Length: 620
Ligand code: OXD
Ligand code: MN
Image 1 (cartoon, rainbow, N blue to C red):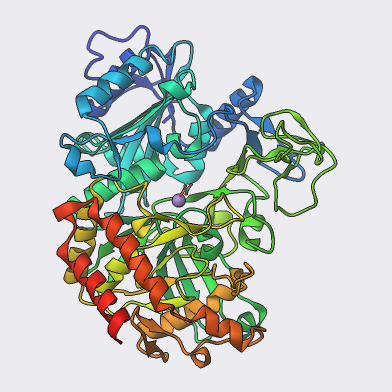
Image 2: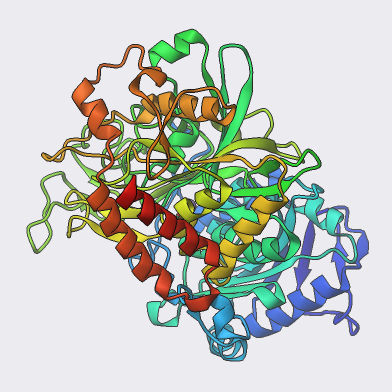
């Protein structure tokens, strides 16, 4: 059914029921009273001219895209070279997630914890209400019913997003299952997360991303940038879902899920968490290096950003990717770093803030080709490679956080299990970070509890190649620092509880692809070669591969890694696996400072593991 509803001329009883016309012009009544009352209330606040209920059809997609092309919200790309692809430019002040304007609004401040911004729910609603008031005047309010996870799966959660942006509707169409099938599933009483979004005037001073986990509500206003406005993703699938997962006994994590098929046909799955800019998307769809490909290794991508995991009746952890699209960072993506993504983004892709070439195709830094002779940059201005800003810095043509939104089904390595309601069994959980000198290439935690501690201490190091102060760390437990919808101390307690409930918890590992020598040279080749480490991890999970115990965990012997066809010196391998006790003791001191902010709320087990590590480092 295609629902077109005008706010004007509503029947007198429209508070409870909206009279809707299906595409044959027949009048029908939608019975989900709570849903319709809420849409009505939000429309009364935002005052759109029209309300449109998205049905998820191809015809609707064509219609909305046509409308956005006519207003300049989308720019059509060269349809013979990039069929189905569009370009969108966000406002210049609106190009990334704004963590300082993102709030968790629980009644008690302590429930949000020291690492989240907090606002009291009443104050948050009142402040946002002022910005939302009349914000959709002259615009259409789109109603997007969407499902995170397969529609009808016990794993899945339903949301309904109201938005005044066609860009949002079209991204949600790629990232989520959306439209009438979700409304049908909701029926008359189904639970859903109430998601309200308006671009309003895109003023940074009037931008708020608010989460009300106690009301199952998300309000986002003043932004048009993906991570702030595609409310199914970070807001619902991580912040709200992590809150619900704790109450309901499951896990919502910032993790990729991938399957590794071995030459004998066995496929085992792993879930991995890395802070942003550590290569999660590349790892999730890696192409095996030649030597391993010839042996018969193959990768199956389930997800690149979010994992929802539950304990199944076999006592194991099973995971799904609640998304069906990827919202990937363009710069740095090329056929060496991620050939599968490059294949996927050649059609049906929405590009955001990349450069536009004269032939109607796109370009970004560290992409496929040399810089074009000229282009239109992400701001929509003429650009040439030699151009400099006022301070003499070269100006990127694509924004460093420019993105592609593309259906997962277009990734050549996509798993045939993407739609399976129970997901895939997880054999190993991997944590990682960018550490130039500390963490070895890989190590295995001694137990689940030790693994939770390892995840709680992950951090990424800032290198000169990035922003500044070498060695400066950002601690990011389980890569969830910006995404946990409640107190991180309680979150770690939840991880410990989950382990205790599992008959066969996944084995836990830590990897570091970014170790450097004293000249700043990367010691490990990374990308596809990372499969050699994953192979060891999966063998260890089955209790097969050799390892040595060290104070921090089990590490491989050089001989237990399959290095066929890889040229790496013994010296580099030794450095990659070396453990510098005094540097580790310094790291423990930094961990202690980080943990102190949680006070008594931090589970005792985390301190127990930290003290045990300290003891092992000093005495073994
Ligand atoms: C993302 C992020 O966009 O983690 O996935 O910031
Ligand atoms: Mn992410």
